[in-house]
Image 1 (tube, rainbow, N blue to C red):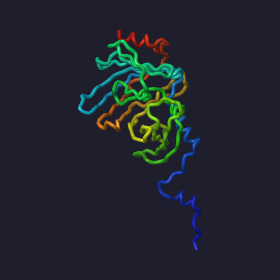
Image 2: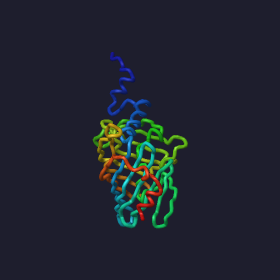
Image 3: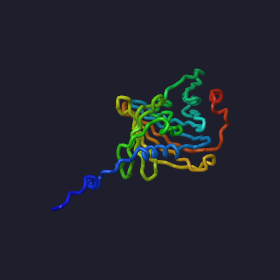
Amino acid sequence: MRIPLPLALLLLLVPGRARPLGQEATDQVVRTIDERERNSGDWKALVYMEAKEKDKTDVVYELVVYRRDKEQKLVFLFLEPRTEAGKGYLRIEKNLWFYDPRVGRWERRTERERIGGTDTRRGDLDESRLSEEFAARWEADEKLGKYDVHRILLTARPGVDVAFPSVRLWVDQATGNVLKRQELALSGRLMRTAYYPRWKKVHSESKKADVWYAEEMRFYDEVEKANQTLVLVKSIDLRPLDPNLFTKAWLESKSR
């Protein structure tokens, strides 16, 4: 007579079944994402964006992104096309402001703001603060194409202003890079899907370590299905920036 295997051992023998990732380990995965992308000093990036919308001509944008992560300050300055040149965004004291030089007026915007009318949001080009803004829950270990990934659900912490209240991540187990991201409305409806096919790293003197960034990002609007945006980070400079750069006066001066 054969003795039945213990239930726990039987579960381990089921093909494709993974042991759940504990809460501490799940939180560490998310903290590692933040830490790998964080720079303790300043950040300047030249960014190319190509936006596609239904029944509209494709629009190509070029902008410069300035960050001071330690103080959570951020500036976007549009260079191209000519109709957008001089427009910009300023994040200071947790408020996001938009400036249009044609009318000379500042307007406060929410985290849902579509940067330049594309499918890009402020958080896509800012420092990663997932562990501060969301609580994490492991959902599964699975395959995403050829990659072994952790699938993790993030839920916005109370009182935190984020673009979407729920975010689902597919994190490469080997590298810790986010490969796919889905953002959901409060109702659970899927609003946007993002893919990150290429990552690069650059050494930071201020951090004394490497900083990782997504060199290529692809965003797909899940409501307006024809809308999508390609983002390419063309160059990175981590040298210190002028403190006056993170002001309304500086951004206004660039359009004169």
